Length: 614
Ligand code: AGP
Image (cartoon, rainbow, N blue to C red):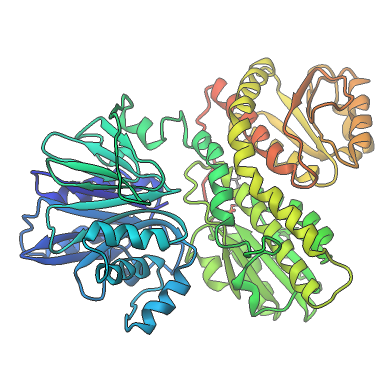
């Protein structure tokens, strides 16, 4: 996510802002910028890359005496990382500057209207559209706050924004809707920021703004107002007791835990702008110019490969597209004959820089295939070299162990299956879903954030209890069938990469072909036994394990007839969407095991966040 800081106070503002951005660097970014008023003119200084590049540019500025400024670090969602896309963005008339975190869903239609009114745009961002919409509303509203509110009421989607105006050099305006923004109350100085670390050295008094709230702040005064009617609101400031490091993790012990708990937001953000108005179709304009694939080859590594294995179930059952899933390091040396002219390749990579996956992409393109890139990092190598890039919009994933990235990849794969199903339906293909079926599935996807918000704390408690109970295990089996097999692989990967306990993820039906010889009372099994067509088979595999004195943790749904050592009940969802409930349970179990065993959760030994070498 982007970093935002606004300052109005008694100090030289630009150094306060730049240092605040530095304390938000952990969030990841690809460009930065700042705005302040000098002799009645709004000055915007921006730079691609790290803060050092911005500071180099600022060094060339005349001495900046402003005591009010704002700054931004950009994690690209619209438009590649480049200075022209960096924030702040100026209105055409140069009187307003805006920084923004989030996604304005309807920015294209607003842009068309403003273009018709003579506005010109220099970036691909939704932010530049918003700042010019505010400028346009100033023509009809009685003051800037009125124009700010009017424009924000027209913007649909998620935003945390900070605004400055050349006529009001000592004031910052800010607002939030479904994106974090916090107000810091200092002595003779006030702050707004996307996260507490930005201003923690100056004040621990904070006001957590509500969705649909505006704040107008000067050095010595502030007001909070309702966006809908500008009526004043009141808040009791809270005192933050965290240290800086805890603040950067949002109060969580580790980034991994924070990112597991971000998964509801990841689903919300991933759905933003990707469901049609009738709620019965997925919108993926990145794919509009491409044919519906006759066959799809998914190629990836690690957790991303597990996502692909899971996505195959949806792509085949919802869109009736035959799918082959391969590990990139195998694909790249197989000299495969797989690619026919109508084949399409989808490479999945959170980082967009994994060497094996990038190599696979290049080989597929050399064979003339259309290659889609599903990435989290905008402008990454895979995103740039793919025929078309789709973004998971999960925000930066700091912990080496991939958690929210997999959730976001699964969501995108579900949307791709729904999208291609809709394309085939529109083409009168008989072998695909109806609108009603898509509407039902989209409704389930839209219900996930609230469901996870409600159940994650309880899952965490179960994970903590079971991790302590099984902490002396030296080996673990993870078993799953059908769409739960990729989850078994992922659960095993999480446990081994975080706690260094040997764990095997296996197709449950394969146990009798040898691996069951390993089972004894010291070799526990984590079995996925969800309420789906394969439950009876999963149950019989559990009985096979128990017959060899193997202990079993079963991840199951309420009411299923199971007799196991530990029955972990999770919310019921229809397969394969039940994976969205099972995945965080598996993540939390491995997190709690690693934390209990005193491992380095966010930086496990021998691992890198992005494997850019073979
Ligand atoms: C997952 O927890 C690991 N960190 C690793 O397997 C990772 O998924 C793999 O290296 C692929 O990374 P990518 O998605 O960035 O390509």
